Amino acid sequence: MSYIHRPHDNYYEPGESLKHLFEELVIQPFEHDLPALAEDVKNTRIYYWEDIARILSQGQSNYDNVSFDKASSEYYFPKDKVSIYCVHHMPRHLFGSYHIFTNCLPSINENNKVVFIDFGCGPLTSGIAFRAFAEQHDITYFGIDSSQTMLDKAATVNKYGTNRYQDPFYDKFALIRDADDLTKLLNKYIENGDGTQIIFNFCYFFSSPTLDVDKLSDVLIQIMKKYNQHRMCFVYHNPDHRSLSKSGRLKTYGKWEKLKTNLSMIRSQITQSDVETFSYCRLINDSLHNNAKVYYEVLCDG
Image (cartoon, rainbow, N blue to C red; front, side):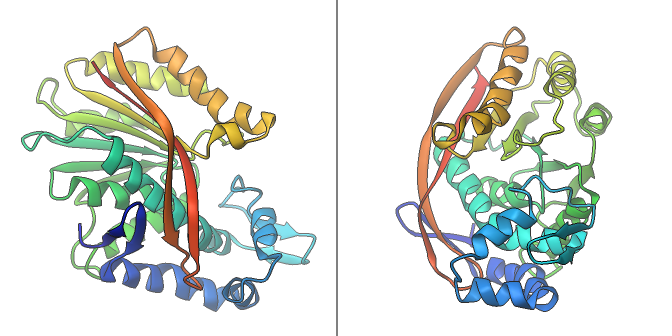
């Protein structure tokens, strides 16, 4: 789709409409509300990334709570933390998701409806990428995130869409905070046996310290049993687990492995996995991020 460009191999940049979205919904709020930090980012001060990681607790911050940063003696409110997250993580996750979808997902049958279930949806990051990948297919989007502030941002981003509030990314769209609500939602959008394809997306999701893998497994098993006539696909993408510390591997890949084990007796699967490398431009100073890496696994019905 026109709002994501790949001018050459594995390098991604936003088209004009996505540039407008980033400028109005991400960059301007960041520069207005956090001018000192924005200046550090603009000038690529050597310590700014450490500040970001500390403020966001390595991405595991509670985005609905006010945080006090002892190092800077500053308070960061929920909208501030979401703004920081969007500037620093959204482009990498968005283009990484698009890279995985376009290179690794099976093509979508033109006659099929799709339900895309986005775990840890944040500000609609993978949702934007999936709409670009699937283009004009009939897609229902369900975003799940524990933070209401993130969900509010996702709703704003979806409404903005590709044409400044005239054409949302998704018309059929729902945001929830608890995966337990998924089964009720699916009942509204899927008739058993109607050919709808269900895609479960897990982008940078399993590092959450509060994630209960067994509870999540129970919900997914219910869905898989009920809609056993439907084609399903599970997409996992996260930093290359081999480059993480032992504790990091346990937090991310270990939880994903546990989920796969819990689901392994339900359906036969065709699996592919690898590390993919891509490049993109940062939002604030347009510096190029070369060789960003993402580990992925795709599990689809046999």
